[in-house]
Length: 135
Length: 59
Image (cartoon, rainbow over all chains, first blue to last red; front, side):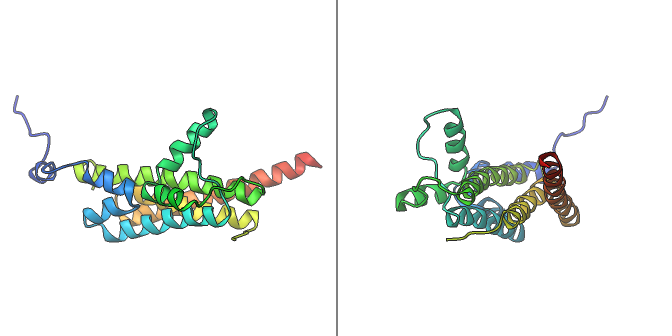
């Protein structure tokens, strides 16, 4: 029985180099993983969406999770960490440190967490593009 | 400080989340746009339906 190659030549070529670079870059800076792969429009749309969501969350006086007192806080920290450098820079600047006092501020906290989670999805998408799993 | 209405917050959330979902879950630009629009309609539509349900339950 004849065997066929699993990957085309272009797929093998895309395996060269450090395949996790778009994943790490995309996590640290929203859209950077797609920029590295030359997907400029996709990267720009992802960057605008994620950064806008994160900034609007802060503008609504949302809270950045800094420590985990219980399991829900731990999930919040995990979501916030998905924001990459946005999270670390804002923590360094002391943004998002006020306690949540209004309903809109609670929405803002959720905006920040979801922005981080969306950034993780975008970074994994960049990794899939890099490995050839997605075109 | 930014103080949107609850519905404006929903629209903003749906817009950004749908954009990311559309780009990451589909391969071609046309299918990305269609899936993003589909997600947006589902987000906003489900909010409107659930809002009416809660309104009717609370009466």
